Amino acid sequence: MKKQECRERTQRQLAEALEFYLQKKPLEKITVRELIEKVGINRKTFYYYFPDIHGLLEWMVTQESQRLIFEIQNHEDYENSLALVFDSIEKNRHFVNCVYDSMGRDALVRFLNKDFRKVISWAMEKGMEDVLKRNGGKITEASNPLGIEQKFLDTLVDSYIASIAQILLLYLQKKSPFNKQECIRFILRYLQSTIPAALEEFAK
Image (cartoon, rainbow, N blue to C red; front, side, top):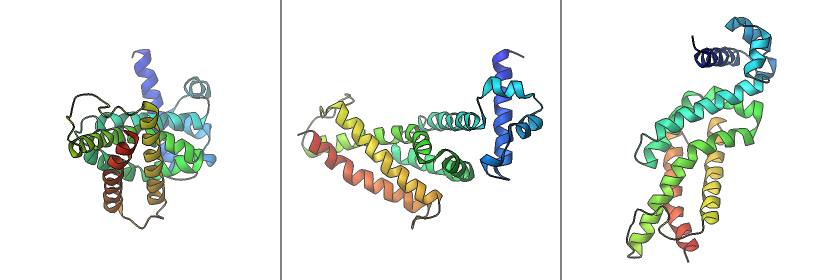
């Protein structure tokens, strides 16, 4: 077996072992010894791949985020992509809550940032089209046909990601008044109603 294949297999096995124990107890109660015994490797091998259990958890978050982004890229609109993100997070609710409990809100927002950035970028493109149509402008292939400064666009995207992350956190913690479909509809209406207005304002 090639070195890279061996590395990936061992990392996946450790991730599966951590997922197994996360179903049974909090992250801080899980030990490296438990993980290596379940996988059948020595302690030195674990530390060759990861600095500690938190490092393994971060690797798992990155892998899941990359997988989700790959799937999102196969969808043609942000509405379906948003539903895909919610479906994935719903499926991995326990794991996502473990990330939140163990690594904090900032770590979870970083995880969500990559997934939602593509969704928001698509929503921004649709918003620009709406503004151009409303003002009789011509829709072009340009990524920023309204000529808005990039720093303003980036800040708008960041603010929308933060807002959606908060809605999602409340949903994950079962503190939201909405079910999953209601959350998705709320976010879509929020984006569709506010993005064109914000873009039009910054285009002045």
